[in-house]
Length: 212
Image (cartoon, rainbow, N blue to C red; front, top):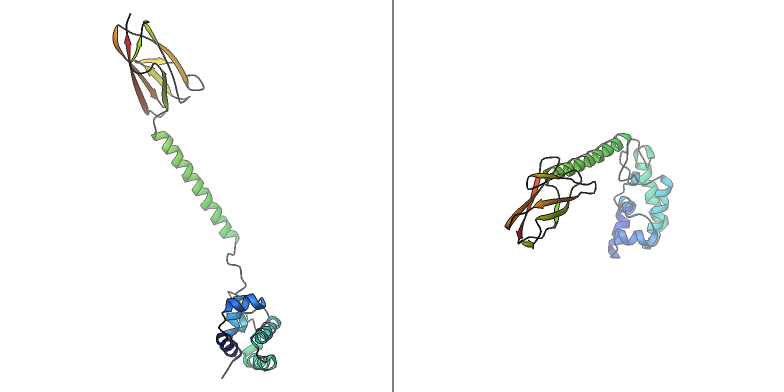
C-alpha cells in the first residue's frame, strides 16, 4: 500500500531533488523531510505541524494536497493511540545535541581544573630541571688587559648564586652581578658558575691575558 511518505519521496526522486533542496525551498528542516518520507510522523513536533509540513511538501512537489492529506488522515487513524508523539520517545529530532546536566557540568569543570593543574605541574618540573640563565658581559673571551684586576659583570636568575673562581659574588635583585678578579701575568682563566635554588648549574669560562 502506498503511504504518504512513499508518494512524496517518489515524486521528489522523479524531480531529481534532495531533502536538502526541499529544506531550502520550503524552509522545513531536512530531518523532518526525511521523517515524513519514512512515515515517522511521531518524530515531528506536533500533529498540527505534521499536517502543515505534509501539505506544504505535497504542494511544492505538485501533488494533490487533498489526496495526500486524505492518505495522511487514514494513516493517523490506523496509528495506535492516534498520537504523533508517543510517550517514552527519548530522543526527539529537535532535542539539543549537547544536554548539559549538573553532573556533566561538574565533570567538565573537574576536567578543566585537572588540565590546568597538570600544565602547571609540567611547567614547574621544566623550571626545576633547567639550569639558571647565565650571561657574561665582561670580560670578553681572550681579552688582553694591562691592569692587575679584571671586572666581571653579567646577569643570571635573581634567585641563583654565582661563584667566580670559587668565590661568591653578590647577585642583585634584578639578577645583575659584579666582581673583580686578580690576574697574573700570562693567560688567566675566569670561571663563572651560576647555581639555581634547585641545584642546577651553568658555567662559562673566559680566558684573559695580562700584560703588565
